[in-house]
Length: 148
Image (cartoon, rainbow, N blue to C red; front, side, top):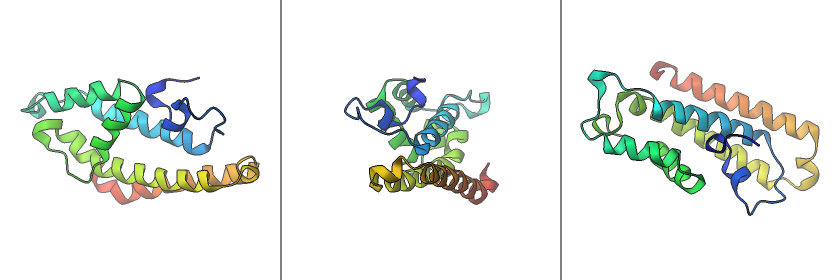
């Protein structure tokens, strides 16, 4: 159980009935919580987007279920730089951090999924993935420190 807006896509997918919860799922939860905070953050009066329908649509997508949330995440992490007049300055400044963090989670998630069942049920492997997820987050923070 959990708040669906912040759960990993793998945990929310009804086709994954036998899915083994991983540390990566918990890091995805932190990512989605951070993304939510960046997107729903109040904009300062001088930072109001000239075209607010973009940020409003992004907010609706984040709150709209798995497929909609995944579409919103694609917008947030896209290679195309968001525009301040559409999304506000804060989200534009946070985009590189969100993009790098999500990319590091995808790499770690791929490693987890490629493991065989005995590795996934091994406590040492679980801890190793958890530690590497934390280290990758710290690397992203360090690389984006000037922007935060």
